[in-house]
Image 1 (cartoon, rainbow, N blue to C red):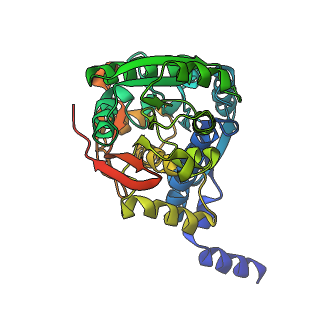
Image 2 (cartoon, rainbow, N blue to C red; image 1 turned 60 degrees about the vertical axis):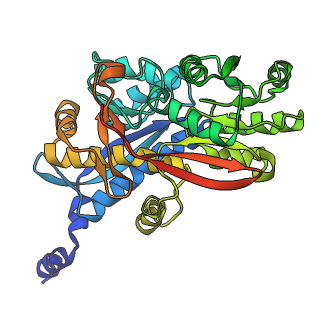
Length: 385
C-alpha cells in the first residue's frame, strides 16, 4: 500500500519537480558592492529571471536529464583580481556559462581565465579590446560608445548647446578607453574635450572638481564612471557652483545617479545613454515578470533590462545544444537571431570594431532631463553593420 501511495504521489508532482532532481548552475559575476554595484546586481537579476523563465517551463534538458537552472553569483568588486578569482571559483563548481563580468578591468582578467577553464561569459565592457577573435567564448551584452556616442552627443546638443566639455573617468582601462572615444565624438561635433582621471575607490572628488571647474567647461561628462561615483561627482559639482549640463556618454545608471546625487533638483540638466528604450511599456514589463516569478523586486534598475537578452539567449542556446559545454553553446548562440520579446529586434555587431561579431545591438535610448524635468528617453533603432 505504501508503494502504491508513493507512486500516486509521484504522478501528481508537476514537471518542475522532476527538474529539481538535476540542477544545472550558471554564474552571475560583477561588482555587487561599492560604486559599481548597480551593474553587478543587474547581471545577477538578469541571470535570475532567465533561469526562472526556463524553470517555469519545466527546466532544461541536459545530456538526457531535465534540470532546474540555479544561479550562483560572485562579487568581483570591480577589480581584475576579483574577476579572475570569480571565474576560477565558478569553474570549480563546474559552471561554464557566466552572465558577466561588467567592466573592462574585470573583462581583461576574465578572458584568459575563462578560455583556460572553457567558460562562456557575457561582458558589458567598453574597452577597445573588450572583444577579441582569440577569445571566441566571450560575448558582449551591448555595443561600446564607438557605436552610439555620436548620436547621443548630437541629441544632447539640441537641448544643451556647448563648446567645451570635461570628461571625468577612473584612471583604468574602463575610463581611459571611453574617454578617448567620447572625446573624439565630442570633437567631431565641434566640442573641445578635456579629461580628468581619478583613482577607482575615490569617495571625495573635491580636488578633481576644483581642477575641472578651473577650465570653465560648458558641460561635464561622467562617461564610464560607476553610477555611485557619478552620483557623488554630480552632487559635488553642484555644491561647488557648477550650473551647466552634466552628461553620461558611457553607460546606463541614471536611477542610481539620481539617488546618490540628491534627485532631479540637483541633477537639473542631464543627458545620457540608455542601453534599451526604457520608456517602452514592453521593456518596463520585465520588472513585472521578475516579481511574478521570483516574488520580489529586481535589483539593478534599468541596467538589468539591457543585460537580460544575453541571459535569455544563453538559456535558449543551452536548451538547443542539450549540454553545458561552452563551445557547443557558443556555436548555437552564433546562429541565433537577435530578438527579445520585451526589447524587440536587434543585430549581431562588432566585426568592424573588434574583428569578431559577438556583440548584441538592440534598440537603445537617449534620455534628457531639462530644468529638473525628465523629458523622457527617445527610442533609437539598432542598425546592422
